[in-house]
Length: 121
Image (cartoon, rainbow, N blue to C red; front, side, top):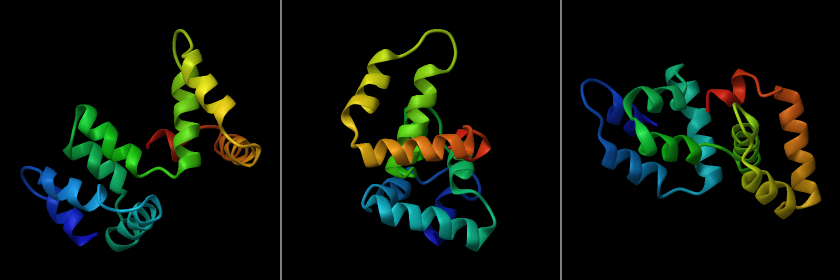
């Protein structure tokens, strides 16, 4: 967490450090880092990443900080938001996930109503 903060603090961003830290951890470890970062610095790691990176690099880093269920909720929302619908994304998620996973997606999606909690990710 301290190294992530150093990589984004001040002028410029140490993108190599971000990749080394987030790219070489399991999903569970990244989620622990996301939560610990908030505890240590009182700042949201995803907000800091959004403020210091851009484009596809930013999207990849943000997506690395989702749990699998959060990511599916995010992608479902993206698939139905705005003009048109991304049917391929809907089919991919809804047809390939287990019943247990679909239930977890449904519960999280309904709980958040896709509010600030997930939309900021």
